[in-house]
Length: 367
Length: 259
Image (cartoon, rainbow over all chains, first blue to last red; front, side, top):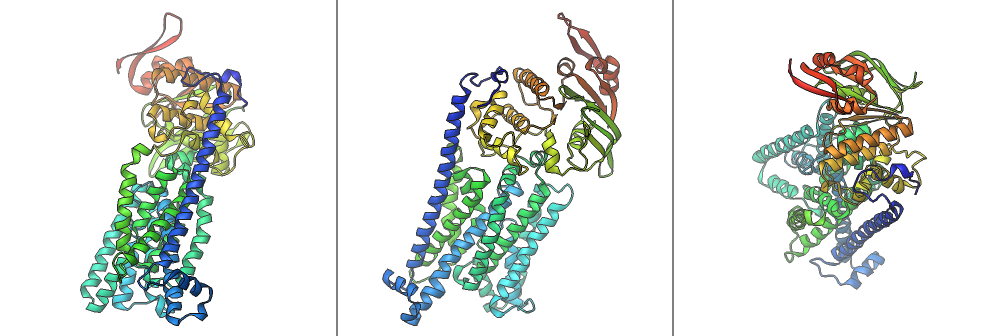
């Protein structure tokens, strides 16, 4: 420990002798903290794996584990119906839950950091509402983007509006002197505006379209297909490393915008990058499965309590917590009521809230 | 020319001109300088402009180096501004916040590489808060967080350190301790240290070069004894003040009332 003697021992609380012993102790404690966090991330991964297996194995059709494995390994040697259940329903649902949860968890985590607001999430700042408006245009008015195949019309419209809403947020955040408070208020205004527009469309809709739309807004993993799953997974794989690469800058940003700038962080640029990543992940996720925004709000809070705010752990943590909550919700959605698949959006909130309150209200005792 | 100085600097916030074509300095290396003046006189704006934060026209020089064209990351490595606002109360350990401050620009200078934790602890120890290293920022008092902010700034080893009211949250003991630390580190590293101060007695006793600003203009600049006088204080603060020798022969500013 290279400490010049004369600079140690200011009139202060710290021990003026034995700093190197103390340094050794702190180093040890810090390293064990890092190990504990890695352990927690590993545990979350293991829980997700277990939850996916459970999600995959349980379901109204009551297939036995051996039948499931056989269908996975030899899809062509089983009854066609069984193949469809395993390959077109069980597997994409279970994996989609993980991808959607991870996307929303990461999007929410970055949003809360760059907007310096614990209420920021794709759900609370209008991304979900914008997606719902896009979907309602498709469902009720039959409006479609040119060249979009039938199976993608609703998702396509939803995606356009969702990404548009984040770009609007980004535009507002770029304005000079636009504080993070302004951006959050603008997002809340977007929520109300899009809700009003959706209500207007509902008012003029016919019964069938109305039913479709209401179901869409409840959010459901039953819309998962392999191409959509592939697209979302690819987005996660591309975007997540970019987020992780910005971890130090985002951590510094948490200490205050002005401080981050004075320490050399190009704050507008970091914020733009983060909002761009958020827009891709959250818009894809909500346009594929509907309004499942709650995860994006709670996963970051849970991750922060479990792992602290070093973004090297907080960002992947929020991603994994989101994936886990979503996967557990998916299990609950398909097994809570026998024979009925409840829209996942409903279950997510019901499963997530107790979890969330438990952690947030315990906050003081943890820190 | 040695030290930190700027030439023809103008800063506008919208239509309002806060600093109008001013040239300040050089703030000498190895010594602590103070920036004095009433609220809203442009002190923080000047420090921020020197550090390259916000838009400003004019040229900032550190010795023979022109800082004006550097990227933000490079410039803050050379010339670091410490904002007046305390570090936020986040769920981050003091040690982690030190490491994050070190990594903020993506490049960690070679002299702290390898032993970041030792370097961080040493810096905390300089400010007498090594025992807080594993505590969370959201459990600390305002004064403790201010000390952490100072340790973060000094731990970056800049060539010029610009501190915006670094004593605002500290008790008397720590105000003097921090001044002592800054004087010692400034001299040892031969860096430029400039701080915004409100306490004229600290300025007159513990700084070596003072600049007084009012409404974006320089009222006086030079050695404390020459700058802090009844005449300049009247012009700057609209007060009636005396500078007298105390029983130990040290200068002391006394305010008799408003002008």
